[in-house]
Image (cartoon, rainbow, N blue to C red; front, side, top):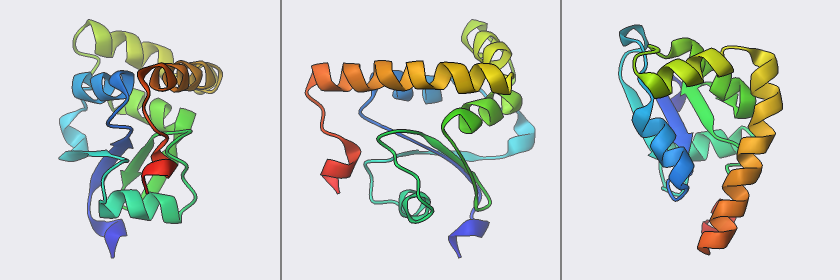
Length: 129
């Protein structure tokens, strides 16, 4: 079963903000290996998340041994798991360590992503299936 296969971050691989975020993210060693998966790929993690109701046009997801955290909760969990090393990680860890800040800021980040992708002429993820 897919649920027992480890830790995955599923994000929009065509979004420049999402891609840079996951590249710069430094997670604590305690998390173990983390696979970065573009939601535009035909990957079991993507299929699993979609089957659980995740809409990758609206949110990214963190999957830890089958448990899915999406949208603001995903950002919050990633902040708690971050090392805080480096300027970017320190800021993201500090801001998104607050559930309230995560809930308030995530819609703004999503709107910026959606506007940017539209301006770049990128298709929605659901349109690529």
